[in-house]
Length: 89
Image (cartoon, rainbow, N blue to C red; front, side, top):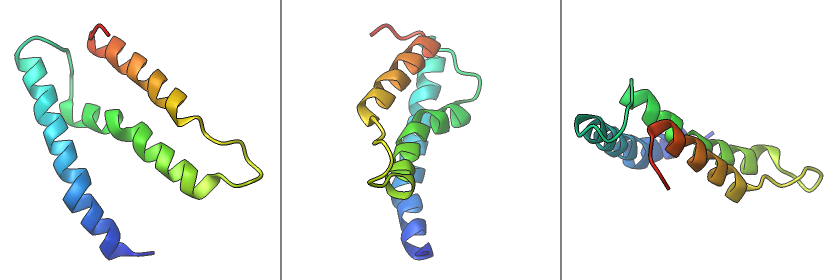
């Protein structure tokens, strides 16, 4: 569609954000605060609901379909993520 826009977004936002999240996860593992087998995959799984919700809203939602409850999606994701990482909230 607009490959240059996609590339700019990926290079300017997604990749730096993933790199920062990987560093955060690696630090948590190093400090024995969390257990993560693969920080790079885990970082992608952490942001997956955000990407999913954007795609869902833009591509799949219409006046004839129920709206995605993004707040509920993120709330459930946080619960699962914190439980998996052993973080008490």
